[in-house]
Amino acid sequence: MLPLDSRVQRQWRIEAAGFSAFAAIVLLGAAALLPFGIAVRVGIAVALIIVGAAALQYLVGLRYRYWRYGLAEDVLILQRGVWTRRRSMTPYFRVQNVDITQGPLERWLGLKRLTIRTASAFTDASIPGLDKTDAENLRVRILERAGQDAAV
Image (spheres, rainbow, N blue to C red):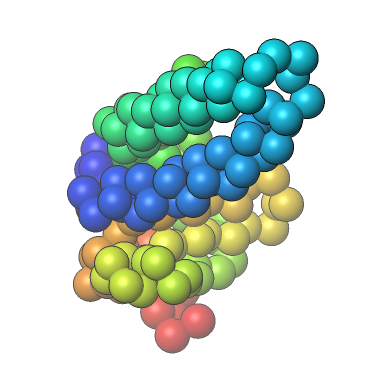
């Protein structure tokens, strides 16, 4: 089983920081409704913001630690999950399409996401945090094992 590119941690940390900033605004607004003095309200909100942001950053490390993928002889294996560990296997013969996408943050970090689509609406598999060349090579290998032309 292979780990994701370590740069994906940076992507996830930036996304978590953005969420934390949004949550901070909401918490500060909600603190205004508390029946305490202004110093106590702001103190409670700031404490919650710091604890929440630190917890999110810690979870990013755990998420990266438990994310793995691998190519077996006849299936693609994805393994992930912090609290609930999930291991899914997608048979190559079911693969219909393999997409490679990049959002703005992924483009800035030099990462790509590989998404595999099958006939079933519930078995789409996605691998985030792949290096550009690794994503292309993985796409070609999956399509070869699926018995399809890599130009699909």
